[in-house]
Image 1: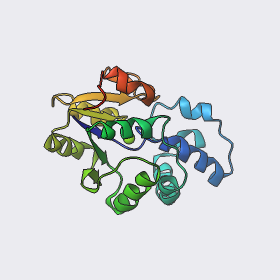
Image 2: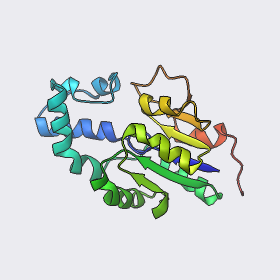
Image 3: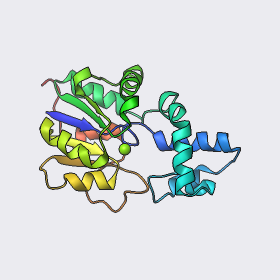
Length: 191
Ligand SMILES: [Mg+2]
């Protein structure tokens, strides 16, 4: 089967990683509880930044946010490796800016994710993901963002939402831990 994955905050804990970097850069000590209570994808609010300042902060730190030691979620690498080891196709579809495409691909490989060069799509706007996903004929697609998942709801692709504080209201099947997804989807070994 064909599995598609968003990367940021689906497979890797990017926003929390960025939250710690904001604290460091701003010489603040905002408690991580504020992060876990966020109702928005954006993380600037607990730092007293407005939308514009938040955007500037993210952009000024993007190299450090994307290419240092952001941790994958537990069992994410192992789950994707198990998929490919059992003959499934794994695709990555990320809205990160195209200028980061090549380095993001290499960074993902370095973390141990199974990445085929032609299975990696980067640089589309959130609403353009739907075209990529439909053209690939995916069986499953997993993402964290409400707006992205909602555009895909009518497509017939089976959707799973990675559980986050800002997507609790979505009714799609929910990934709490990547360790459980193999069993949850009733996937068989040795295909
Ligand atoms: Mg995401």
